[in-house]
Length: 317
Image (cartoon, rainbow, N blue to C red; front, top):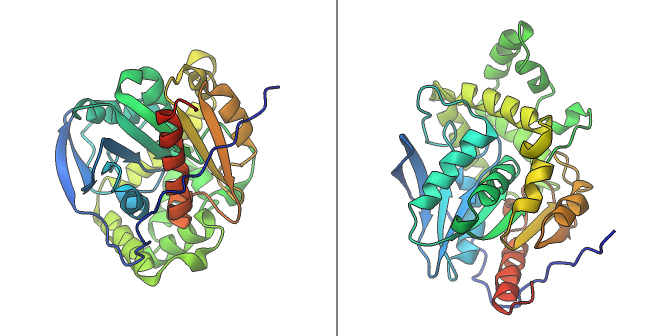
């Protein structure tokens, strides 16, 4: 078994972490018949495209985009059905369809982009990078949602979510879940995704509550979450050439894999296998960190990303 080369950390000076930073302004782009909402972080250098995870949105990248804006121009997209991107009729919310949307957005840029994805967004980014290597300059995967079939309900913000995608009983469960308040949903998310929820500033909690209140008013948000959850689970059971495990060796871009040691959603034990399957992959495991390292440890994640870019420039990745 080949040894895993550790990912380096850059020593370049970073801007001070501004915990008062509000979400970057958004704009809508026509992408494959969608009006996709994109939050833009003005910066210097090539484009960096950020893809959020299941139940997330473009706001999940606020702090990391700020840390990297002296090196790249940031574009954080709301996948159809999430954030402020309303899905078109017939959108099926499979990983492949989400990846098509990401690819179509990458095609609108003037040059290959640094692609960064978290959780489900990481799996989507793998599909995009494997399918269109010409569009991806580098790939960063933060706790990517590779197949992880441990039968543990504590990996869900609410154990009832496992029943919500089932026939017959699913409709009743979905109605029960819809009764959760925005405060309750935010509390569940913090406890599930962060190793230490106390690091989240109060104003970030208020932003999340407001975002959940906005989702409660969207007629399509619940459907998008349920069907994307089913699409993710379905991808874990997909055998053959479309399996995520089979796609990783097709990724040609230099790839950084970051994992929180205390990730409850996708086990850090999947990290070594993920990296070994990537032709140009390196791994960094972050202690005292959960599922959303880019939110919990933005400065460290920025140093790791910059470390990859510097190593690629030196031809030492």
